[in-house]
Amino acid sequence: MNLFEKYGGASFWSEFLNSVYTSLTASELTRHHFRNKNISHIKEMLLGLLEVTLVSYSHISEESMKKSHETLDITSEEFDEWISIYRQALRENKIADQDVMYIINILSSYKGVIVMDN
Image 1 (cartoon, rainbow, N blue to C red):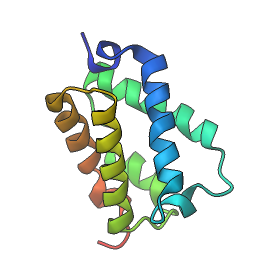
Image 2: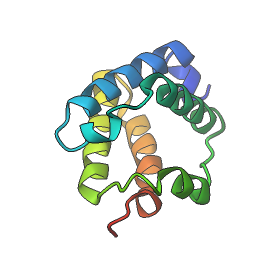
Image 3: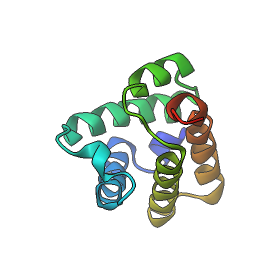
Image 4: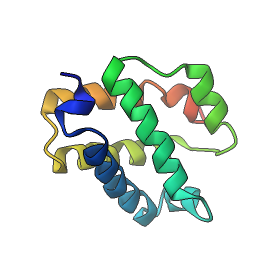
């Protein structure tokens, strides 16, 4: 069974993303990235990407990630905050430690193409 289905499929991961975005929009470091944005649309896109990644165990192209983030001016500190919030949400939602590591490693692998202050 793939990781997407292991934890309950779209309904579980949708609720997971809700908790992540609640924390991201409350964070001093990251909240400015979400002002005047369509959070529902962002979560829908991320749910789709999460499904593709966790069902097929494949990575999204670095070029695609770079292109979708290049105008956001995300700093290393903001990226690290996002990873920290994501990790905490995974643990709070009872994701197994080895699965947390797998997911965080995938996310962390994109830092070089998402962060613009390298």
